[in-house]
Image (tube, rainbow, N blue to C red; front, side):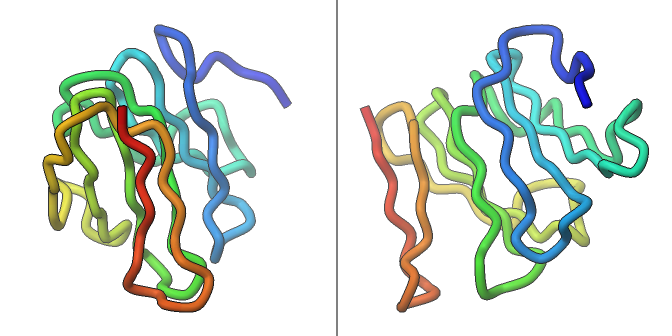
Length: 116
């Protein structure tokens, strides 16, 4: 399937580790979206407020359901509970644009970040 997900260039698309029908996307427009692949015409969640610049990376936690992190060119890592999406649960300024995030495969509380 193909559809226009963002108004500007998409930088990341990432599957939810616990729900095979859920896809997250982020783009240069600073918008984070969640899609249900059974009906991708309309996103099931849109966050236009949290990111002040492009969303560069998205990772759902491989062991903790409903845990999602994002990285942005606004130099911030954000942690979301995907059941309560009004705002991030936590934010951490890291001093540079966040280009990649990766959960540790053994220690589920460790997250690696590639930062400019």
